[in-house]
Length: 126
Image 1 (spheres, rainbow, N blue to C red):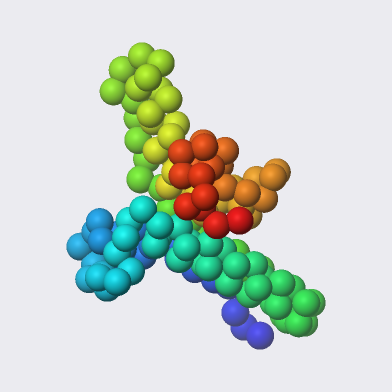
Image 2: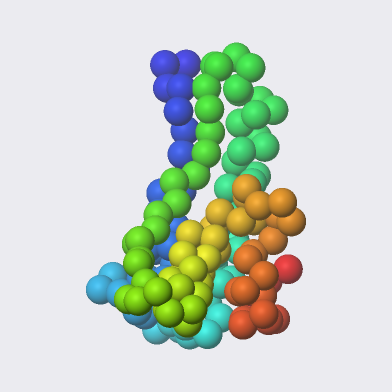
């Protein structure tokens, strides 16, 4: 009852993207297909987060008076120039890192960013 702040996952992008072949973390070869594996794993992280939040709110929050959430991370980027293409590229980087884990939770549609859906299509789970 002394713990009032709960975090389900800490910086999921780091272990999903960097741990799936692109980072220095050791990755498992059979789960290193960067075209799909991080997205499947990310979807499972989001489902697990939703389950844990629901369970905490139903069973424990009223007794403990705590809060539960997720910690998302973003390697901030600035456009190289004020050119429209540079501005759009910078926005995509933010959407594809921070939006990937945040939009399904906090966004109005409860889905991945539309730009990710347009680019990755069926590789993003429903």
